[in-house]
Length: 403
Ligand code: PEP
Image 1 (tube, helix red, strand yellow):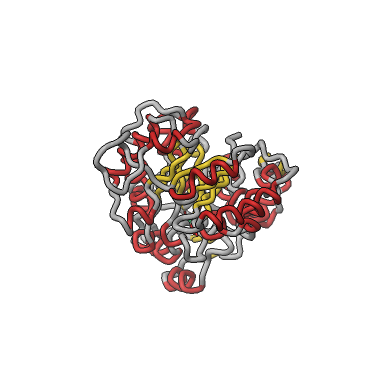
Image 2 (cartoon, protein in one colour):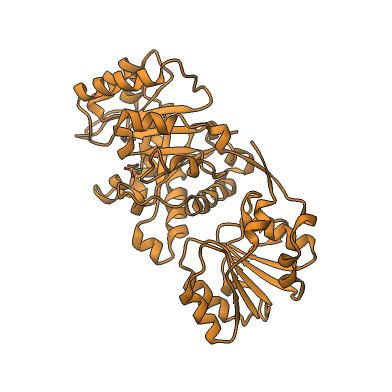
């Protein structure tokens, strides 16, 4: 299991006096607790780094910087070098944070050099990637994340996977109080892991920690940490309060990361079998390669029952030995599926239904929670049956969860 990281980014907050008060409380809360199964990391502003280093030197807490230049020294007014950071015991450096990209105009070109400089000085980069709200709304999330990730890591040829950390931070969720749902975060985080796997191979990709960041709080951290590709969190606002950050850092990780044993399908209630029995070709939009996701279990079940299944998901190439199509437009010519099943996706359901209708299916199924009346009406106008009250949840619930 990847060792989760709970990182607090103080941004431009906390003077020395405030840092001292913070650690008086935070260290008191940590006293007597054993957190060797995780890393707790704090990124104070540059002026407090050395001071905080002294406050935490007898603890397991790791120090992070909020940025670093790529060069060791030179005429770079206002910058701090990786050599200077490593000299004072910094372990991690946050790079490419959206505030650096969007407020200070840092480009992928610059960020990749910073990543290389930091890595070559023995520091561990935390490379932040994430789309803005308009990019998400235009359906560009995967494109943006892919570019930032690939360019950001492009100068690291064969890195130690345990020394690089990625933080997926959707810009629209940072400091806004709007957290990505665990499903939205997982969808992108597993896409990131796939990209890492393409670049460095599966074995290494499995060792790289991918954090989520964006309005993480003590209230939402547990749900986020249940996702298999969320290996920790990067916390801004809530890390400024030692009590809140302690609550975030001290969650029971083992209880959140559960392993799913696939269900015994013979227990599936008869009424669930009824609809698919009539049909042959099924398209699954938003299919997931993770056994604990409802779409995976449903797909596994349908394949075992002998249906022709066509998974669609831009983030994956193969699931359960089946080729995955990036979108509904790229399915084989003249497929004429009987059913299009729509699972939760990052995009709105209505445009997906519009695309699905072009395939002329007999039935459209929508997962509970994403179906909406507007999308339903759209299909029914065309005489296509819509099933909204799905029983997939029941199939999912048959999975056994090992904790
Ligand atoms: C951040 O700055 O990296 C961040 C995630 O901030 P917040 O938790 O305040 O959204």
